[in-house]
Length: 121
Image (spheres, rainbow, N blue to C red):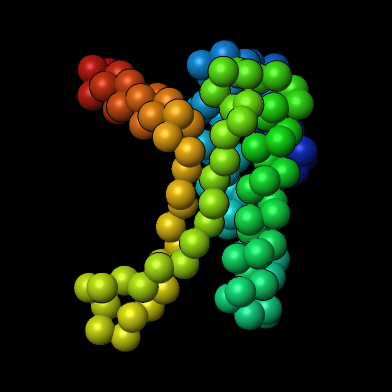
């Protein structure tokens, strides 16, 4: 049985609350950005970035609305920017996420704990 597209979103998962919500959010964030760049692949880079930003804003708002983890998501932001890769001679733009400090800290903490449990197992 294949899950429907809606079922694959973390914010719809019954366990999406508290600390788990941060993990689900990080998965949804990556998925959201990837989907928007694919969906608008024929558009200019500026349009792709704008549409991805709108989708990220909607995703963050979705996590606030469902009260997945109010301390983690309320009042937080993620801004997408294109920056030039200094190690690339052609200056290929790289997507950079500017995350509010509180949310970034929680995401990094969650990733660190995940890596620690994976090395133990």
